[in-house]
Image 1 (spheres, rainbow over the protein chains, first blue to last red):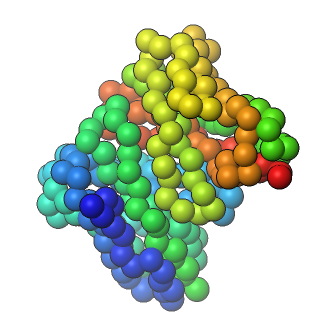
Image 2 (image 1 turned 180 degrees about the horizontal axis):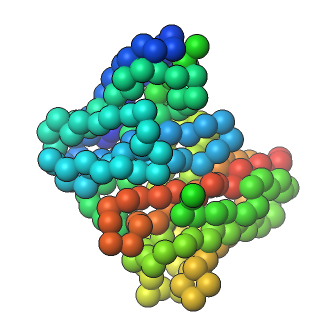
Image 3 (image 1 turned 90 degrees about the horizontal axis):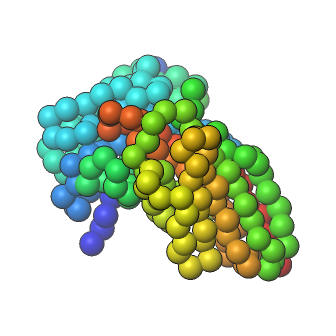
Length: 112
Length: 111
């Protein structure tokens, strides 16, 4: 049982490049989330999807877009990467509100 | 701004001592959850306390919740070096599926 799988694990981008971070869960969870974590900081919510077919902005959505491709997959896209987006990105999923979340191992993104 | 603010930001104790960390939040909640993160890895769920509960135990963990003060505390008793990690509280933003984390407490347990 893989849980939440994120790809890639590491990525270096040049300023202005675009990329998509992939996230898939195999727990039949309804809700999925993208967070970023800067060094020594907490997690900040970028976007979330309460259920298949819906997405909503979190605390720091600027510069990002998301797609809930199906119930399993939730991708995060950086259209034009900036050095300020250098961070560790975590995907999480959970059955629904008021339940525990399960996290992927993170994607370490560096924008130079 | 963060839904949850935690203090202290960092805590260093000797093995065997108790560690207490606090979380404050801003909105009405149905429950509050605590997570642990080892060195930049994914977070792992520790315990959930519902808004109608005041205290909950799980092994060496004790969580309290004071909804009138919008605060929670996590106590780790008889700490071990392996408890060294960052600890975060998380809450569901009232009426939405937003799931917001606090700023975290970095705990270091010295052997």
